[in-house]
Length: 82
Image 1 (tube, rainbow, N blue to C red):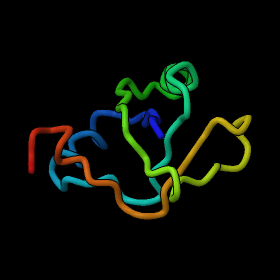
Image 2 (image 1 turned 180 degrees about the horizontal axis):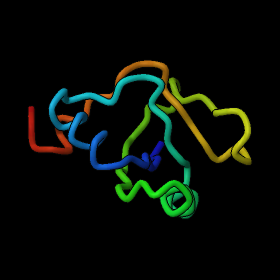
Image 3 (image 1 turned 180 degrees about the vertical axis):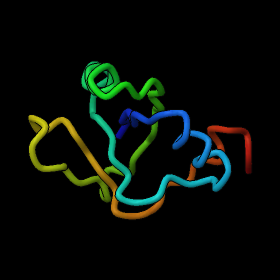
Image 4 (image 1 turned 90 degrees about the vertical axis):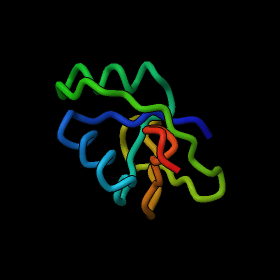
């Protein structure tokens, strides 16, 4: 499942340093919802992630458009790490 994670510069730097997004890893199911949330919160970065279908849960509220994982998500490949 392709989802869109919204974050600020501080969190993005932390993801790059640690190589992970710590749980709960929240994301939006459409780019339009991610853009709306980004504008609403002032978090300028939207990262496209691929959540495994079997582990992805629906986050209550948010019109059924928010998803989350309950374990850390590796982001090394996003930043060129192996």
